[in-house]
Image (cartoon, rainbow, N blue to C red; front, side, top):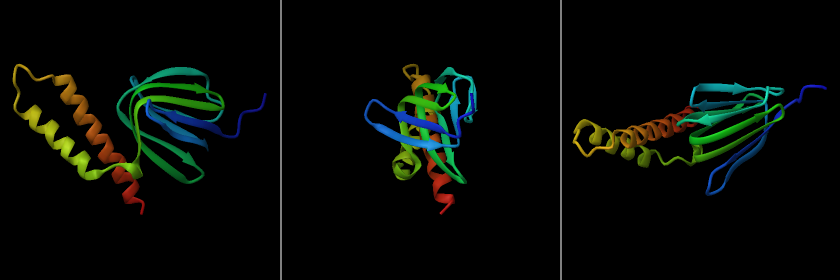
Length: 140
């Protein structure tokens, strides 16, 4: 059997379909670390963490901020079911910076009632959103 020439990538959140594209390469933030997928990859299922995701068509890379969920990898298809997935171009930088400041403020004034995990995740999401947005803006 011949190797597939590309990968069909589908990214879906509970709210919407974020992407459906034929791509050459994908990189995702797994719970065990980042992983890359090329056509013909061995099948597996991975849990996703908060992080920067990208996919490439030819020389063009598209960046997204993603968080939580699963990725199913097949030789010719990657299906991403994420709680959060946001294209870099859609990110409101001012809102992400405000969320980062709120998380920093919470974490800098510890209290017995502080939910550290929730504050940590909020900080990570804000930082990943800013990182994704900066990748797109730096290429313009």
